[in-house]
Amino acid sequence: MGRYILKRLLWMIPIILGVTVLVFTMMTICPGDPATTILGSLATEEALAAKRVELGLDQPYFKRLVQYLIDVYIRFDLGASWISKIPIISEIKVRLPRTMILSLFTTMLSFGIGIPLGISAATKQGRWQDHLTMVVAMVGCSMPNFWLAMMLVLLFAVKLKWLPALGIGTGIAGLKYYILPAVSNFATGMAIAARQTRSSMLDVIRSDYITTARAKGVPEKSVIRRHALKNALIPIITLVGTTFGNMLGGALIIETIFSIPGMGTYIIGAVGNRDYPVVQAGTIFLAIVFSVFMLLVDIAYAAVDPRIKAQYAAKGGAKKKAKEAKA
Image 1: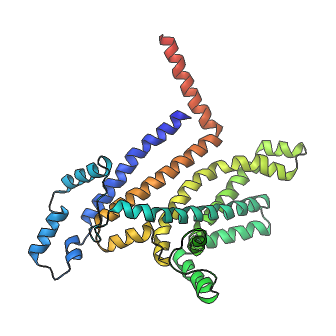
Image 2: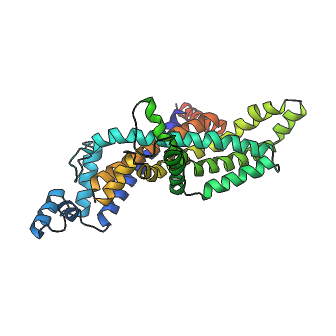
């Protein structure tokens, strides 16, 4: 198990470096002049040239890239915003937890509703519960989250006045600010979770050991809960990681709609202002968060799936025998 975790940790290094190089390159080749954005269109050419030198934009691409990698991964310096001059790390410390709360809340909501729907559809295949679940899943996959967000705001914030429409709160009372954003972003994840759970459960229910358990007189609830569900959850665990990534990306749009001061509004605002250091640092942090979450998902998958344990145990035993044979 330790070798499996180490292998996944080592894979994170090229992934994060690749994301860093890709984002830096995209910021370099994208149209627009940060100096003009900062100083305004009325600035003189001399002032614009001086600002480009100050920002390091006059240097060659590879020199700037190497310097950026050294600053970030050796000196651990993300720099400061070109617009506000505020250190980026201080902004991320405040904003990242809000995006994490929204993404985790949305993921939990998606699977908390999607898995029971999928189980109900599989155990009642061909009945109205199955058809209803598939209709709900199809609607969830087809519904744009920004449209759902606006409809929920109109209903629950403007008309009924049950929930706040914008902003963020503090403490336990502040959790109500996450309800509408999370519900707006969970539809696609819920639909995918329901369909995947239904498919996995149907594969498991048709297995011989499930037929044997039923033939022995095991109650149907125990067959589903103790035998079928445990094995059907193995592919669903992997789906949790990709769904969290989708929720993390969707949170960038949802935060803008609900004016949540998280990583989404931070990065999107920086894109409009050509604030390259903020875009690069924000994307890197989101990539790290997603990679760590996927690592946790892989560990959970390995803990549940006995085939991975057996695979790495066999490799470790083979190497040990080889060393003993050489000795």
